[in-house]
Image 1 (tube, helix red, strand yellow):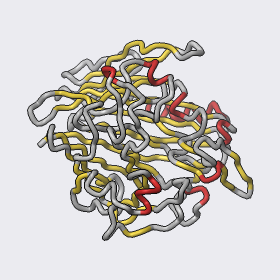
Image 2 (cartoon, one colour):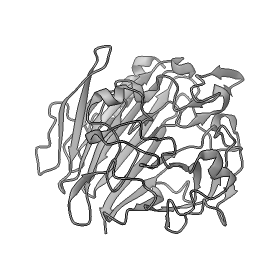
Image 3 (tube, one colour):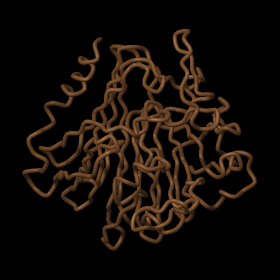
Image 4 (tube, helix red, strand yellow):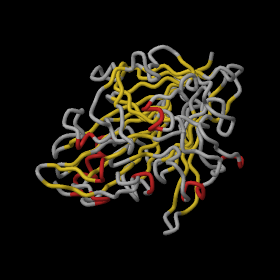
Length: 381
């Protein structure tokens, strides 16, 4: 299959949903607005797309790295506030940061020693996390400018992002045509639909790396947030945070979030896995895997009353507690992001799956289609 056909396929699949002639909804209050968001050092124009639903919830996304710049949602008193870490301008995202809000690809999370074998051929990737490969490499999907079009014509405004990752980019085989659709539903849901096709056998594992703090970015740590995870097992890791291959039961461990538990309740226990991760930085095996779009996690922040539910079609979710934040980064409003000031719930296939045949496969073949969906649903109580 030629590269041009791959790129066209992604656009045609969504062509009936997209109006390219307008950036604003013509009916009701649901709308998409767009504005300039600066330029990359190479001169590429970057845009900011703001999605607003009829209930007044607002999500801002930039086509640089597919980054979720803000998610503004009501607390229990109805006050609208932002709940994701990041920056006020493009300049912050162009500098070094720990993937705030970013689309991650081709492969989210780690691949051991920066290499994998597919069809008897070894592929070598960047070793950008110690000896391992992390989040797509030096210039992953989080550092490119995606083609972007507003999604209009209904009650779920959105933006459609497309990117053609060429054969050999960051060491991965195949021309991969990726499409990511962000939409904001009337039910205060940020929905992310991922799809991709290839002209050569490859591996793909896309995710979003938003850091959440339901009290607000820079408003202290997230240790009082109460987490529930629909996961009876997790994948323990070695000192490089690479899964050992074991699927370990969470029962009677600090990793048991099957009932609501404050994130900080057990985070400092002398557990080998917590010590290796510096806190939680682990993939959880979702109990509902294979059942379509299903509940994965719920987070409740007692002070604001905000609730975030996560639903996904993916088999796993990486729960990370901002262990490497240290206050050096100043984000929105000039506020410092200290240790554990944000948490991530990155829906995904498992880390290092290309080297773990017992894990769910991440191989995509020509003629097939990669397709996953994740929803972040917001409310208050």
